[in-house]
Length: 143
Image (cartoon, rainbow, N blue to C red):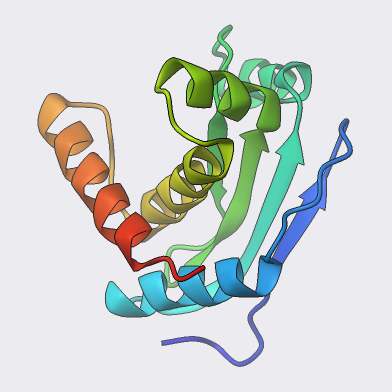
């Protein structure tokens, strides 16, 4: 279900980055949330650089590590939150995993959405389920 008042917005902080094909990404996210039988609220994706996300990681999570994504849920009754993504880290991970940047970015975007839906990735079983869900929804993305 999608709340008619809900929005999915994309922003950039500390870098110049523009998501291409924004409308298809929005439809894909909405279809994912609907497929998981969740009510969608407002989602903000904030694209940034490593240092920006590192500062957030230190300040809010007390983790002194670089990461590609941090997700902050804002509500518990529906899928709503802020998702910070380091474009630098996504580019580096795309090289490491030998995938196109676009595919890795979509994987990270849906990873954040899946976290808001309630999926975790702390244990091996949770990581496997998360990866399977990512792969499933990546296969549903229509270019």
